[in-house]
Image (cartoon, rainbow, N blue to C red; front, side):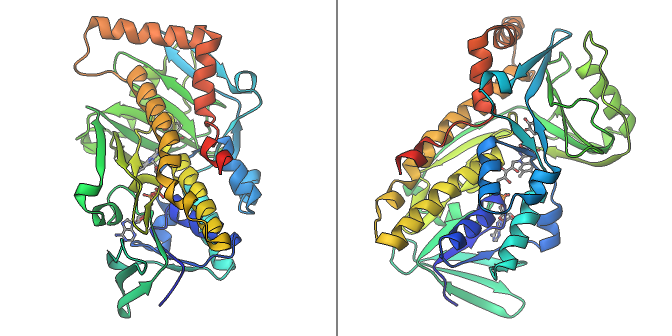
Length: 396
Ligand code: FAD
Ligand code: DHB
């Protein structure tokens, strides 16, 4: 087999890259370890920045998103028993976020690729990358017909945190920057109508809680918990009690209760691997960087990376210019580090740390008071939340 760009991973990064390349007349093949059903049902992120929504709509995969996505003009922050609104419309101005589940984006992209005759191989195993620093890189893998090889011009490692692409780069060529957090999130999907139109981030003595949603019938909730939290200790009644306690404020608001459809523990980590390129292999999305979920940046960053990569590859195939490909890593990293900073900051401001003392606790409350009380500070939160501009792209 032969293709122009071999893509490992059918997550948001890999599928969006394949879609954008197709629109520029560039062939690609996507390899995915799981089944189509698995990737289309995997519950993960759900908040899309304005730039992500615009890209999906402009490239023809936004019809369902426009019909079913829930537009939000702000978020609420709760602390010290009071709730405060950050108004994106007013502060950004006119920019918003849209709640639309990651697995719905995946379904739309898979359908678009298959309708356009795109090649996605599900349930592949033993993926191995080869010839990365030569002009003839290749991907080896196994499927139901046996050992396969795809000769490529370029490879895109879009295989998430635990994929094979990043590890295919010699360790001496990569510098990995990491931060671990001493807590995780208990993620809950419930069949209950969202009782608030906008996400609510609550700082509480018992730990952080987040209220979000997926549709007019489905609520998405998170509770700060231990990294090794035992789900068996969280019967549904305890989950609702804890959510009501942590979200309590003087306005008396409570989440609507309903059957819990799914619970899982989501790890929290910050990681950046530099550079995001080695020879003809380009890393994108979680394969190159991971953010803690506070602020909902993971999927948006993955899409931003492949936007830069698709543009650079299109330029290469159109004119032979290699400079945009050479600048890929630097272009992405400039924005990646700003988003890392924001995700780390939101996480640090809202969670309880087991190492914190009275000083740290009061400083956190002062920070929340400042963020909600100062227009300049609210604006900084808002412009990061709706998505920083794609500066790198403007320079291309
Ligand atoms: P992924 O979506 O991880 O896609 C990578 C794909 O590569 C996967 O389909 C994987 O099966 C495939 N793959 C891996 N290895 C191989 C291999 N060797 N061969 C072939 N295919 C391979 N963000 C939020 O904002 N809110 C959340 O609640 C939230 N929950 C999350 C829960 C989990 C468990 C995880 C991992 C992430 C979550 N995120 C969340 C973050 C967000 O979902 C990710 O940032 C986003 O999925 C990144 O997209 P990606 O395409 O880079 O990687
Ligand atoms: C969601 C996830 C987040 O990390 C966040 O900050 C807000 C909302 C969500 O999954 O809906």
